[in-house]
Amino acid sequence: MQITRQADYAVRAMVYLAQLGPERRAATNQIAQEKHIPPSFLAKIVSQLSVAGLLQTSRGARGGVSLARPADQISLLDVVEAIDGPILLNECVGEGTTCLFGDDCPMKPIWCDAQKELVMHLGQTTFAQVVQARPSLAAD
Image (tube, rainbow, N blue to C red):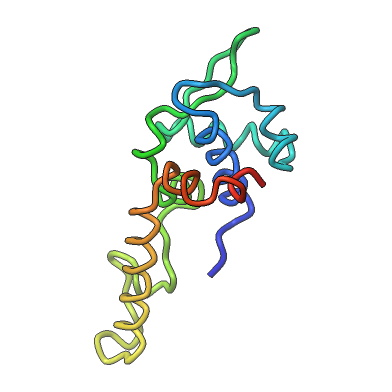
């Protein structure tokens, strides 16, 4: 499984904003340049993250984007799912999906456990933790 490039860019932008600190804004062109994100792609990402309630945007000379809530209240899962939708390692893992093999499939419990662990880990990892754990790497 690999997250999309769009989700990767969204995480980069969120790390950048988390590093700025609470209620600080940045211009999208600044984020795009610092995090090597195509500006037009970042505009779409910012829009999606704003709709999801993760970013606040403001226009004008003092405008820009900022985190909509503290970095310790935004998880990696929040951002990935805002961009890519729910994480599914395999189609048989999702709610309401039917597996051709049903409960007789020996792989279904393995896929379900792996997905549960991944979702739990991403959900428990906040942007504050990312920035605190590796400030020098978060800046890249």
